[in-house]
Length: 174
Image (cartoon, one colour):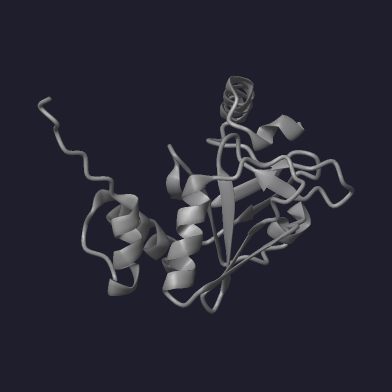
């Protein structure tokens, strides 16, 4: 559904239906794929995806022309990764690549999810499952994100970015 690129009430309803389906099948979340033969992953029910390749390299599904909501949390994670000397690329990610265990870690990112590790992916069509390690780099990204948005002390390379996220509101008695 191309309208997933926009924050619409219908997308939240669809996301809730999908989470209910996942829950019925004893999972916490669901991954959406496109309709291509490769079944490229797009996003969760309302979260963007980040995969860890190793050596401080991350990858996320390509968003241009895709039915993916461009997420603020993903943009923040992108900025963290790049500011700390890492690399993040955006490309198509076939579901098979996940099921073949090509990633050393994975996470969902979003307003409610913040940065939440993914530890298991199951494909009901092929009946294949893969456990994904919760890489230290994913845990570190999660911690840095939470510290950053909470106004806690972060690596000095993130100080200016953190300041740009904080809006000081002053009371005007008039």
